[in-house]
Length: 174
Image (cartoon, rainbow, N blue to C red):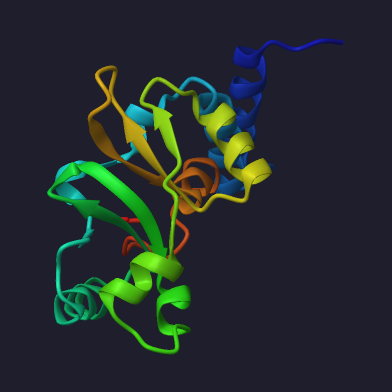
């Protein structure tokens, strides 16, 4: 027998209501079917919510942002959030022999990876997994930055909230 998406979703919902399928399992099944319908623009952290490090900022500015926002990944921008020049993983930053903006820009900041806001969630997930990416920069049709997506964002679309209510330090604003 072959079942349609709608039939599987109805069976999962009915199973959840009867108690034969747990609520979390039902949520996962529903999320799985919705996943490939979503586009990056639907779930990206918006540019106005991103925590960024400025290439022209001071080391004190960077460390203040890192310690106050507590993310693990940061877009590094020059002049505006439309000019993302790299991505900083704070593990790479704190591993530098001499911490500072200049040293980080030379050795720790990696090339940004850009994706269109129209990319489907399943395609993006596959690409991020294959390329070992933890954060991508989302661009609109004109090349302007609309936001960012982390691997955690994509996982939360599938399995729901990963950390019990608060946005994950890696996810929000990266």
